[in-house]
Amino acid sequence: MPNFDTGLISRIQQANDIVDVVGEHLALKRKGREMVGLCPFHDDHRPSFNVNPAKQIFKCFACGAGGDVVKFVQMRENLTFPQALERLANRAGIKIEPLRPRSSDERRATSNDTDPNELARANAWAAKYFAANLAHPEKGKDARKYVAQRQISDESVKKWQIGLALGSGSDLLAAARQKKIPDRLLTAAGLVVGSGSSLADKFVNRLMFTITDVTGRVIGFGGRTLTGDPASPKGFAGASDAKYINSPATILFDKSNALFGLDHARHQIASSDTAVVVEGYTDTIMAHQFGSSNVVATLGTSFTTGHARILRRYAKKVVLLFDSDVAGVEAANRALQVALASRIDIALASVPEGKDPCDFLLAQGKEPFERLIENATDVFQFKWTRLVANLGSQPTIAGKKQAIDEYLEAVTTAVVAGNIQAIEKGLIVNRLSSIMALDAKEINAELNRRIGRAKTTSAYSNTAATDRQQPPLDLGEGLSATAQREILEVLLAEPRLFTDVKEKISPQSFDVPALNRIAQVLFQMLAVRPEATVHDICSCVEEPNLAGLIIKLEEDGLKKDNFKKRLDDALIALKYEQQRVNRQPLTFKQDPHIIGMT
Ligand SMILES: [Zn+2]
Image 1 (cartoon, helix red, strand yellow):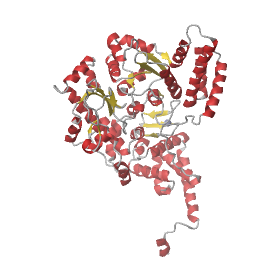
Image 2 (cartoon, rainbow, N blue to C red):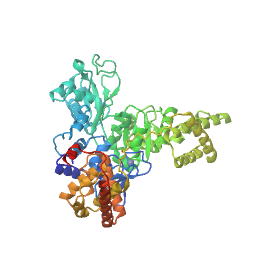
Image 3 (cartoon, helix red, strand yellow):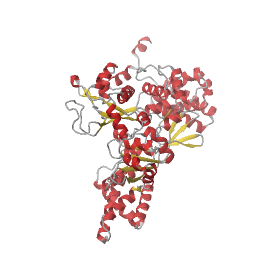
Image 4 (cartoon, rainbow, N blue to C red):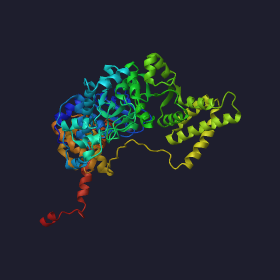
């Protein structure tokens, strides 16, 4: 049992409804008494992830992940049990002392690593610090002028936590030290660079954009230079001439898996079933300012399968909106790969007249902007149109053949890399057939030939499920292990039968380690709270895989029903097995003290 105050744990649980917390990470749809969505813990093809609002638990039928709200946050954000509790307490505005790691093992494991919560706190402080600089009557004057020029409203400045990094090269460092924020934390957060006496601010004289995760937690920053050209101060480790720089990768920030604005955009993305992806901070901010709030931005990278996987949990369709006419063949190929690998519809659009989306919105307004998005071209069509356009008005047969060839090659590469299922391949073939006006059978045969060839020549066909899978627990074998499992199933499904059990056996009767752990918690809990639910019991184990097992056992228990009879049979079987084992002569594990005593 964790040595946390169980009252505090249940207060934290009650203040964080599991549907709300999970709903921040994926779109949930009601299905009977449960809510379902795409599982964030494995590469889910159909909604396998169930949330039970009444029981306040979740369960994935495909990968076996399961638990309560604390477990979800633990797994989703890769936190320890105390870190997840603290995170949820903060989320609900419950004031708690930073929780100490429980065991010395855990302390050892975390002492070298930075605590993600600590890092997020340092980032949150920095966001406030940058915002105060921007608001400062003198220091923020020029930067505010720039913001006004870009027509970013005061409301947007506040909503997006826009700020200012000052120009001396050590302003943030000095302010942080005054606040007793340790240097190592600033370094880990990527706010300062260098070491020892050469420690300096990473962001110097820049307009600062605060990057948050889907829950609103500050994970990093983007800074736009305010000096314009090479005049920016040199000589500091942090000084850079680049127009935009971002925080380096940290334990919180991985730009190929982060999207700017997702916390503000996710509701609109889910309700419109469409996510619009732009390339810039100001593009995103302006779109929201104009009321198009399903817009997010990549952070200086092209759109990856990581991004697609995140958005797929909220929407079926992604529109990539490019600046001016740069959406060339290369961008289309990349998008095609992502679309095929992530099973999401991708459409492409670009802003006309060499503008970026921000300028376009300011010049034309919301409706023309939304029309651009509505008229976006599906990536399959886009690619084909580009190829055909290159053939000129009177394509030769050889030219057309070459275009088909090139197109199928691009699709083949994507199919091989993306591990496409047969059914999806069928859909793709139909799509290609209507786009290219060719017979589907012909395309299918050609595609199969190419895929076969590509697979044998490429050593790597991407089978990487990058998602973290739960390590399977050893549940033992044989009559005794089955009986132990059965008893737990019944107790979790029908806790009132505990009175029958506690007379006959104790947790020591469970010799399968995972089942023993659950029995310990269950017996302890039911002894004081006969009405305890599976949710309460889950909250007493720290390991996510154990929580998943508890949910599974309860579910199996409920399915099989017939509790009393099954329990009695299992108790008899367990007793019998234990007597049989005890009758066997002791040939090993003899304790010398016992021998001495006999
Ligand atoms: Zn799953």
